[in-house]
Length: 248
Image (tube, rainbow, N blue to C red; front, side, top):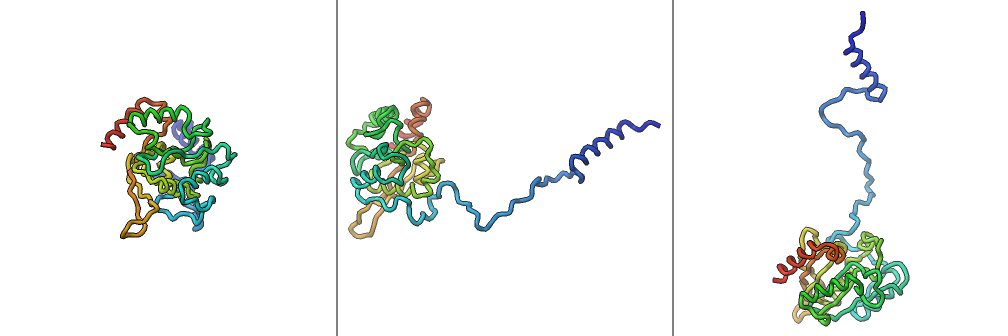
């Protein structure tokens, strides 16, 4: 008697799965395909960039930066551990101390040499500042890195103390307000990217009359990167609306 075609098909299917290595019945409950990885007690689970509340490293590779703004500007262009490459490509910050506004960008433009933000992004910034009715003598412009580095290792810079260095720079400048362009600046300052504004506590390096070392709560406005604003009209419109809402 001929075998049942359906039974033969089922038997053939079962043989195929056995040869594929499946030797147990399948169940509805999901099971992991791989065993859990053993986690070493010494494994490093720290994030790529340190949290704002994380203890700082014992010492940054660049040591202790100067506590004087003019000396800091010279040190910024001469300290070899701040960034790789020739020192001739470094660009100093520019502006006045205690300005109405401190402008922070991640890095100089590619063609910058003697003047920070001397290219098309600087031209865009000048238009923005003109619309804000801010004069050049009321500003201070600075970058988080001393030279243009398109492949900068931002997590490593943050882990080395880049955020503390940027805060130190802000503390020397002592601005009334800060606008930071781009996610790298935001991350170095420990700012929550879900929020567009914040109050940034900065040590102001002078003592009050009846207290010890004081801290200024400097208003911080976080904006998209200048390159994003240059490429996207909608981003420029949203930035301007947010700025007007913040300043009012």
